[in-house]
Length: 271
Ligand SMILES: [Zn+2]
Image 1 (cartoon, protein in one colour):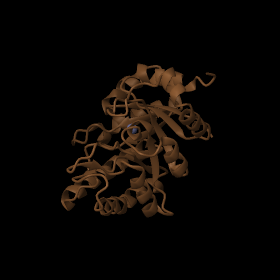
Image 2: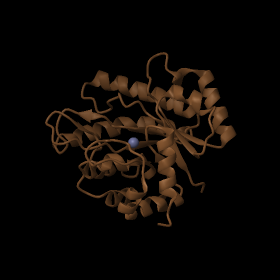
Image 3: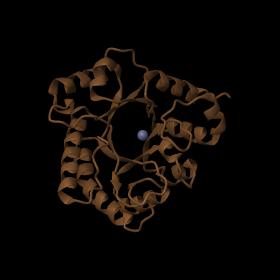
Image 4: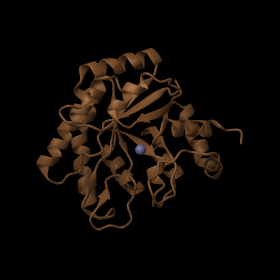
């Protein structure tokens, strides 16, 4: 199993620069920031360019779906549009031979522990299986990313923002195989259970990690540093084990310098 550290690319168009730069990551996750008709996901030359780059540099790719899409939208025809676009992103995924497509489930207009949230999760999961099937048939797969838990708010919460949401999702998922991408930064915000508990519980479904640091309140996407490694040694060791077993560890920071800094802090194990 090839071990992989990954970086993210925030804008589709940033790939034009990435292919010219020195690359030190085994994996690149491309964020789909544009879903207009002019988006690069529909551009065959762009797709060709990425494929050549990946092959030449022996990097694997993944795609982060557009975060503007609310897959949990209550109004059918808006949700249908969100799923139609998600399928087009899945087609892009297949064309660039991406390892996986990662999605945010979206949000709903009530607080996180409202009972009707389960219905909404059920609805999203049902609709997601066609995306999963399409991806699986083409050698890729689908992952769900956990979201941050916003402070008690009657009007909004994210789907997949808590440990209990994932217990519920897992129950629906059953023997089907939508995987999870665990974002340790999102999870660090307001959650009751620890990241270690989450990983141990859902380890067999988790295929990749988003790793970044914050103050427990704001989703800052800061680079890891030695202090963080010391304070979170148990989590760090668990993530290292996961990395060694072939799970992709992606440093999700805002600049390449921060992603490199995160990587070198993460690798410093002899502390
Ligand atoms: Zn993330």
